[in-house]
Image 1: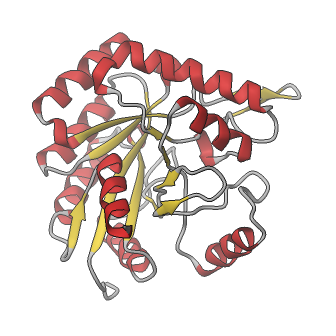
Image 2: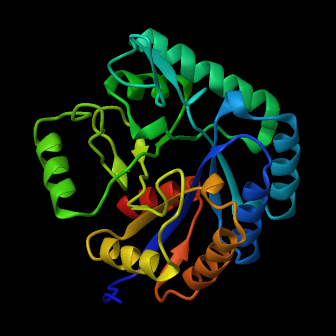
Length: 270
């Protein structure tokens, strides 16, 4: 395993929440058992009454371990007759994006009540443009969560984008992970470790620990992205339990909800 250096702050993000499947229940149990907070990113149009009941009941048991964010509205749109599994970017105007974001926000506010504070927004497939960011600010979102990968090629591309004051390079966004974005005033907390590909997990717990170690060499704040529906089988569930247990044994690591982490990092910057 690679050498880990310095203290690290970790947040866990689970995307595509909508129905209270066995996979979601197993995911919640694995991380709650190990006292690791998770930010659950909810697709508003996919959210069922049964899932609302499940999420609110689980959060009531240990409020510090749960955070609910908005993951678009439907996680898809039609562009030139083609079904795309993202919702934001140059294909839609500012007004269209604002309408979509507001519609999703209203659903979560109505269904989750005080358990949804509206701070965190994750654009599907991490795709957005400056109009997306402007719309998020207009509705009161404070935290953007997308991706900020630690590989050298990614970091070079991000540096070029920042140097030219770009919000995105094509469809992918230009990240300002761990800081306030100069193009919108949003605070960004983006993932650097994709644990699965959105459909299945092909890693071992040791693989993920090594990925964390590599990210830790270049950034002190590290986000792990999961899609709970990729962990349906008994073997997948065993992977989650082992990984969650091993995460708690990492030296010099603390775990945070995203809203909590934003406040911590802003306080340190003052």
